[in-house]
Image (cartoon, rainbow, N blue to C red; front, side):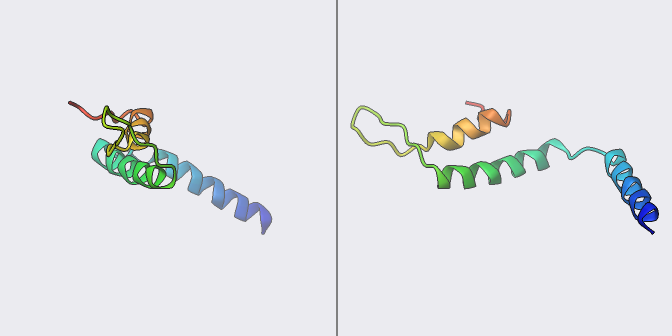
Length: 72
């Protein structure tokens, strides 16, 4: 029974590896969702000349790390 279970799990793992990769748009939206959560948990804001920053740099850093830098 244990050998059958291990063989079944091995087949499932091989089948998962054989599936096509996630498209670029889906990867982008997954990265956006993950980076928004990370930015909310660890906020880091850029300070401008007035001493107030409204742009969250933690989100930008996370998106650059995920290779989805914002095109300007």
